[in-house]
Length: 284
Image (tube, rainbow, N blue to C red; front, side, top):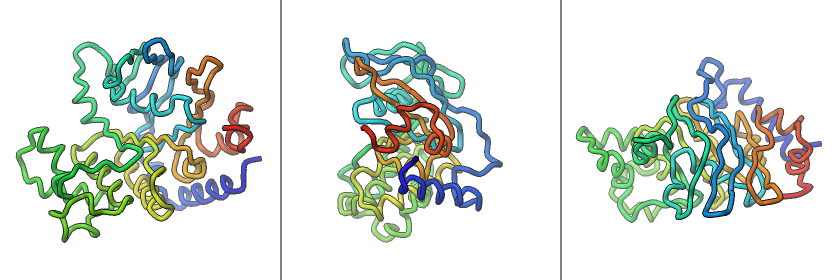
């Protein structure tokens, strides 16, 4: 049996989907994958962090990745925009496909990959600049020569932050609350118009009220973007995700994908005993 909290979260989530309130679950939006991994293996020097991961990320949906600490969730999500390239000793085999192309193939510019596949990190990391300059930074360094104010306003509106900061755009981003800073970081990612948004535990440093705002925002953004979220909060996965991937650590500590499917099925009728043991709190 799934824990009562998960049951409530699932009930709320699927009631919202039925009534059309969940932004990432509208049936008239396309469901095909925009990104996927095929037999992905990752090493850091001699340590294998991921083994044989094959996972599809559908467009206009929220995909959650859950599992115990140390099972490779963050390593996996960072493969989708080549952030692991920046870590010494990283190497991989297999494929990471985005829009039909292997992003680790020859001639692929990782900077362009990161422009099209944005990322929001665990802790808010605004630049020590004004709110306006934080959002304008990406378009500016990418050579945009149009009206930056329009991009800044659009991104802040998409991140549900415009009404709170529109009169203080020249103030330091560091004066914002933690939840506002995280939404600013989301706006900064949106300003360069990505196609996929990766979120690595985006609510772990936030209070419950700020967490709910981010979750509401994710559902709205899923109408326009594919979203992949790593979370330790299983109630959060149950509330917001359309699909859930469950990862575990093998005996040699390599991360493996043991189950992937619609969130309701994964939480209420898991195929793997290890999945049920994890989501019911027997371990992890």
